[in-house]
Length: 172
Image (cartoon, rainbow, N blue to C red):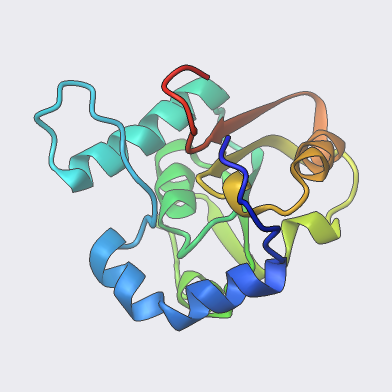
């Protein structure tokens, strides 16, 4: 995982994403993350959806599960998973601009709740999620151990966490 040369606070990360919100939406679209190129011939949009589908596969999702989206951005990933798998997804983002956009989502199936809060603040009860995932958000957490500790605390026994992260080396 990439560790910044200087510690970054949650407030600084939130300000960064709020300030650059229009630019990020234009460049990244609604998912605000990279993609997964299975063949190398996918469009960026297809690769983004392929990454979400790969996360869903690794989570082993079942209808009715409570799922946490750690660093949900605009909530597009949460909505795709809720609709395709009949889930109740709760997403958190420290960006007020992203949360405002995400709160407008109304999935055709399942449910999505987007909250403007810091994952590291520990605002969830113990064992409240069946599954949780973080797509390119753990890199922004100033305390990596606390990120994982909080995920473990909020997962039910037998729960599953999937993390997609930028790496500083070619081999993890």
